[in-house]
Amino acid sequence: PAARVAAGDAGPRRVVRRTLRKGTFRLRVAKTPGTSYRVVIRIGKRTRTVRLTVAGPKPPAPKDTIVPAPAPVCNPYAGFLGTPTTAKAGFIAPLWISNDSGGVLEHGVGVIWERQVGTGWATAEFPPNLAVPAVLVVSQPGVSPKPRAASVWSTLTPGTYRMALPVRCQSNGAQGVLYSAPIAVTELVLPLANDIAPVPAP
Image (cartoon, rainbow, N blue to C red; front, side):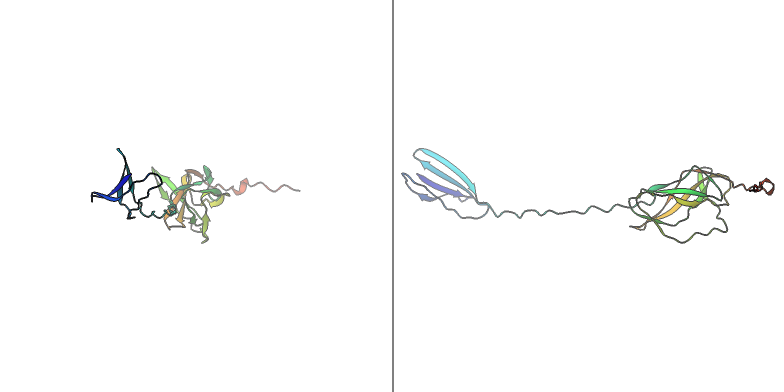
């Protein structure tokens, strides 16, 4: 058989011509990456064409890149205060904190009372003898497992109020407020001296 090889646009180039009756026949070509060859083999009147391309170096295997998930953004207004629907001025009301901010919230131990005025809300008058300890409280995401004690100010007159708790995101320092649903506050009524029953004799 006769064989020749063509590379690129340089046209056909005969690299060997040999007659074989049996055995094997090998061709060697330049190993330039990306070079294409066309090998034409003729056996009598039959012709066979083989095309091949010299492969280049294998690209490096991609490394697994772990992209860290973005940190959740804390929203200090996401959440609410769970309270009873009624309260009595001068008493204590239970308070649950539902932290839906996506992070840890910091706040004090006292709440602010706001009175409903028309369609809006106004901060109620602070009691003159109100003392709130400067204690930092941390609330984890979710509902607080135990209720906290909220002081119902003795200066509140009968009406519709809500609790407001200023909070701060521990992660980014964003400040906001959590509110309760409306609460019907009634006035504290103390018994008169004439209405006090004596202690029964043993």
